[in-house]
Length: 232
Image (tube, rainbow, N blue to C red; front, side, top):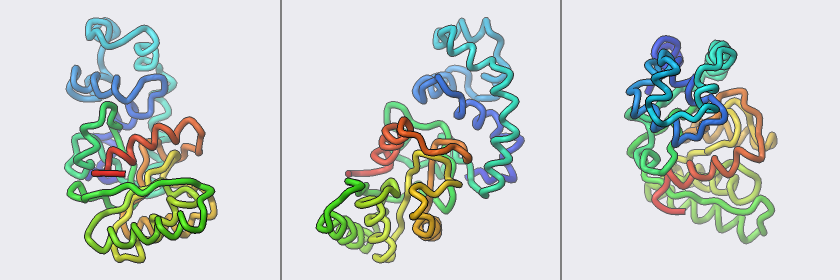
């Protein structure tokens, strides 16, 4: 796992590429395969980008945008501020199953500790769950955690929060995948729960720290929850 201290020199380019909007995770992954390393992609001439066959004009414009490159320093400052780790798809700590989804995130930002060997089950559900739903989410998660299964959910109100709580009560690990930066507790009332999850597992996101919650982020977040897990 790359820590913040090692990040500035050798992870700057991963942070830059992963944060570019308007390019899908799948396209970014193919670009890494083609160029070998984000640093080489940063240095690539426009003619090389065209020759790759992977870059429409809009993608080239994103990759060569000088203003986007200037923001990397601010991103690094945000990562340092919340003491997050930066885990690239080539790191050993990257979740082993997540690599095999069609559009894996190039980078995960993490507070807490990810373990690539974790065997995970996702427990997710309604934000407006019935009492029965909330109790069952907690019960199932507690039982699974007691058997060494890591519980993955989204830290939302209702079922998700209950799943995390059940895993912690069962003495196990739990992982929250966020649709915002790992420095933001969302919903706000789950701030204490977020701190507990960090102590008993990890809070992760593909979004750079400082990214506020957006309705468009949550469907994309869900692919990561399922990608961590043997089942949902």
